[in-house]
Amino acid sequence: MKKIAVLLSGSGVFDGSEIHEAVLSMLALAKLGVGYQCFAPNILQMHVVNHLTGEVESDQSRNVLVESARIARGEIKATEDLELDEFDALIIPGGFGAAKNLCNFATNGSDCVIAPEITSFIGQFANSNKPVGFICIAPVMIPLLYGEGVIGTIGNDSETAQAFNSMGGKHREAEVQDIVVDEINKVVSTPAYMLVANIAEASVGIDKLVKKVVEMA
View 1: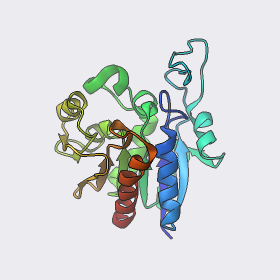
View 2: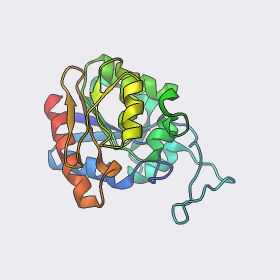
View 3: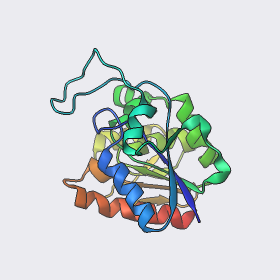
View 4: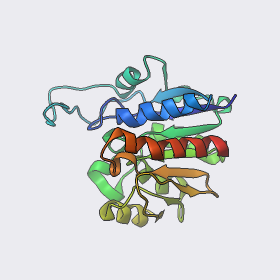
């Protein structure tokens, strides 16, 4: 049976993984009869956001791995514990955690860098030519990981698309139900909550992405 790694970045759209996207990804894998294992880096979040008020709680700090364990129901491993041979592919849900904790795109835009733990983790899949699915804002990491000319989408936000291109990628506009596939690099991306209005719409593109990633594995 194929087994897919799922990379989380905390718990909650404003400072971690987008919970709907993470759960929909795992649900799609389970419906396909595919096994999965959640991972997250054992690092501190950039900051903590009160999801009721939208305000940053400057007096709080949280750990990305510990918070991600909430979504994974405790079944999670640190990124440093990856045994690549056990996995056929990787899926990365979005949420601001992908742009704040996995990389610093949220603050640095096209001048962003990816956290060393994440470069190592995703790089193992990329260097082994194993497929990787990027959801929502997570695709902003694609050019830095795969280099000049790699294809991906964040939907149709012009500013983010321009940043994607300036980092060396080739952005393709897409609707919420669409996926964009780079067959050469085995990269799949979908906009999800970059565009979506509700969870039902998000599920369409995520289901397509998961199916494609599994097929390519």
